[in-house]
Length: 70
Image 1 (cartoon, rainbow, N blue to C red):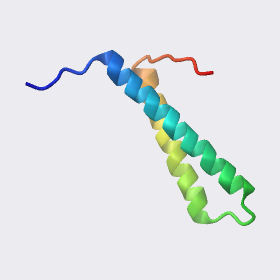
Image 2: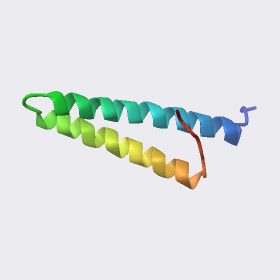
Image 3: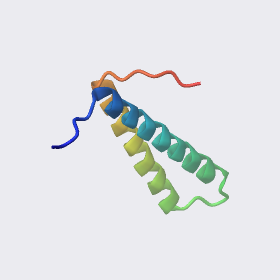
Image 4: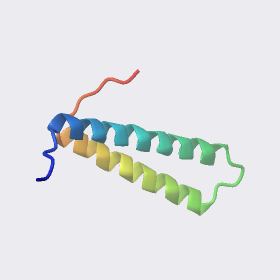
């Protein structure tokens, strides 16, 4: 029998993914901002990371997940 997933566990996984993607997005932004000659590839990677972050954020809103982060 398959293990039944709890909402609380899934919400925590969603938050972890959200924080990880947010970190990657901000790191890419800083890297490209500090770059002397930013490439189109760097800009594309930022757009991909931002899209992932926004998709996860939308899912968190739909699931009504709330978290405070210090």
